[in-house]
Length: 113
Image (cartoon, rainbow, N blue to C red; front, side, top):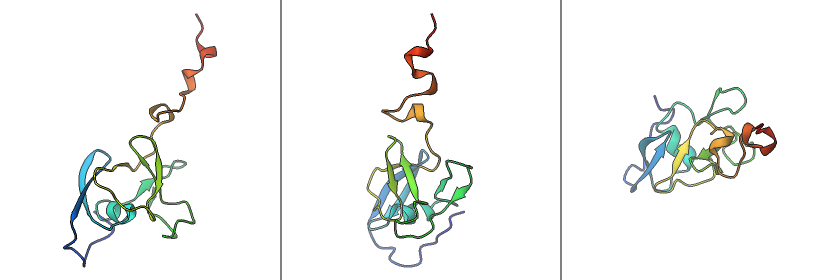
């Protein structure tokens, strides 16, 4: 069940986005945080404990609203506006799945022939 329920401004244009591979819709002018919390029970999972997080300060200072896009880039959900086609992840991607990072076994020295 979603944390936020939209009560006003429902006539704004729809903005399609994806959350954890599921098609969703937000409204033009929504922040990523608003878009996600009108669809889900939490914004993201903590990369340390796996516990659900939903943002804290709502002004970009606390770092609790960082989310990851499917391409590995990160954004602050409370201060970034949703854009058509955004592909958001609520759980952090493993390092090997993020372009430009190395997996633990990716070091040439680890290859023993």
